[in-house]
Length: 296
Image 1 (cartoon, rainbow, N blue to C red):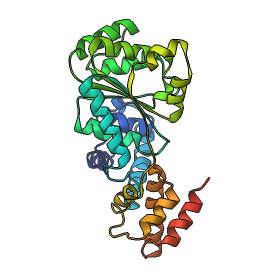
Image 2 (cartoon, rainbow, N blue to C red):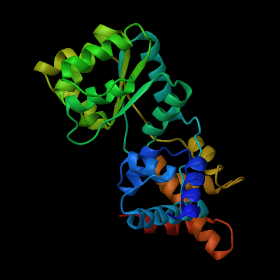
Image 3 (cartoon, rainbow, N blue to C red):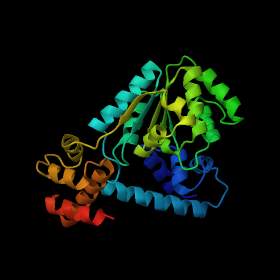
Image 4 (spheres, one colour):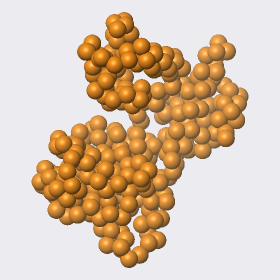
């Protein structure tokens, strides 16, 4: 075992606040494997594992060098809207819905809300996310096993959340099915907790356009909202986290990113990288050149 490599991994995890689960996903290994490696008890193919760890640390170093980490959080108009609706749903114990284009900053706002309100439960949906998957994740979120039938886990979760004044957020809600929506409606009924769906515009369109089984779900959404893109003021506050006193560059960044937070982050990081390689400052010409390179 390479003890220097193990020490370097521990330091990087501490620096970035990474859990063993997150590192395991990055290495395509289980969190148990990472735990065993860090404690010096791993009995598997250590050469193959350490090769992955070296690659992970090299990528992490490059990311740090060129500022590829996400931008520092700023209370943009998008974040303010998402967090305000989340708070309303939690305090009033109602169901809400927030949709917006990909990259506009929905997930970042949700994570910041959870950071400020650790009692909030955030569930990340994914393609083919089954009702049992949702229930298992909720079961684990309330410190239970995540195992059992859907109905048993549902009863357990209701028991844990009843009158708790907590919030359940389903991020990327466009991946959940009708049965899951019904289950979450019942959770709101029986436990009294707020529920917030966060997703792409097509999720709201699906719920709004369908009748029949969707009617009673649609009628329960008290706070529906569609997010706008970042404003110029939002862009200015984000650009200045990377380029203090950016002045006129903010308008260039705003135009090139079209008010999309993810695009802005990529523009900023790559513009700073290019300027660094050239030994100069970020210019409008660099931003526009990078924007062309990033256009698919």
